Image 1 (cartoon, rainbow, N blue to C red):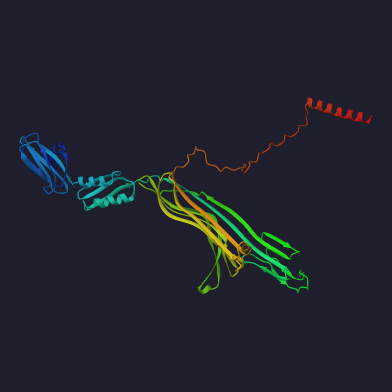
Image 2 (image 1 turned 90 degrees about the horizontal axis):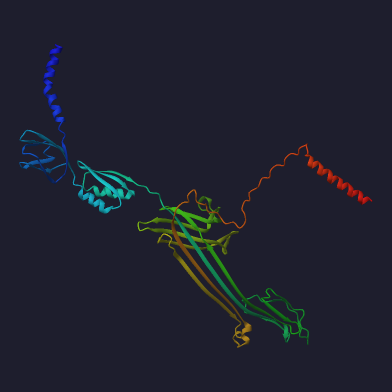
Length: 472
């Protein structure tokens, strides 16, 4: 039974075994079509019959005895078999895809510097390649969404090494002030008929009468009268024989204050950087609510502050969002509250956004403050007298000129290589002098060389003979 069945199975499978090698021995040609487009195939011999496995994907029709017209109708794959009149068969593997020319052209025109490849699979698109930013990848996917039902994002983000940007800022401030003061105070202890008095404009300190005594008859001097001088001004003169004194204020002042700060700060592209060179001072703050009347301490910063965010643009420029400030403690403008002295702050602040080329300098702020203050005081009536009226006038003139300039220079910088010399501060004197170790003294040997013994003996003889000569 087994041998009969085996022979029958072998006989039944023999035709299939003969057909399978014949089918596998004829590899098909690969053809790619796009939906809505047609191609013409030139056949080598006269065509007898054409057959396609999926007419919904591709439509094949003979035009002449040796030409076949193929038209892409839908997504997918199909096989076409062509028989010639001699009975020979030719296989074609046809793949119908989307028409990608439009989307490829659009993506190339929109992102000319990006490497984006578009591949279709039935009704879906796959975006492959490398782009520079995630925003470009999102925009490319949005553009492809209008051409297919499904868009697969296989784009890789190429993260380049961020450029380092150093911002060089210069604060230059010059403050000039000048003052001129003039005033006269007169004092009499009884020169005019024994009359005691003074004249002043009140702007400068004048002597005050602390004691007045009656004047003796026929005597022009009143020695019992006392005066207290609180401010002798700059010139003081008194004539005892005339019992007359004068206080003159004549003063000129000039001052120049110059402040220069050059803070430099390095950060990466698009990253904010900030630093503060200065300090903090305490400020008492009253609490409310359940802790009413309680005082807590908060600290306020002051000094040189710099905060900026640089961005390198495609135009090879650097866009900088900049906030810079220079503040100093001003005790003259401070306030006193419940025993606390709170100082004020003198602040120069600039906040701006600029765009510069690498190494270019821009003056982002400038200020010229010119002030003239003049105060004039005089005794009514006497101050209007020609020539002599100058003795009854006082004048105080103050002039101040402040100039402030802030310059900004952004630069793209590179780190130092390991072999490059490292920058060092230029100290006027050597800093942290290294301690040089001295070698330990060698232990003396008990055995003394013969030459050393001879020399020691000569020195000893010389000393002994010298002493003997001294005694003689």
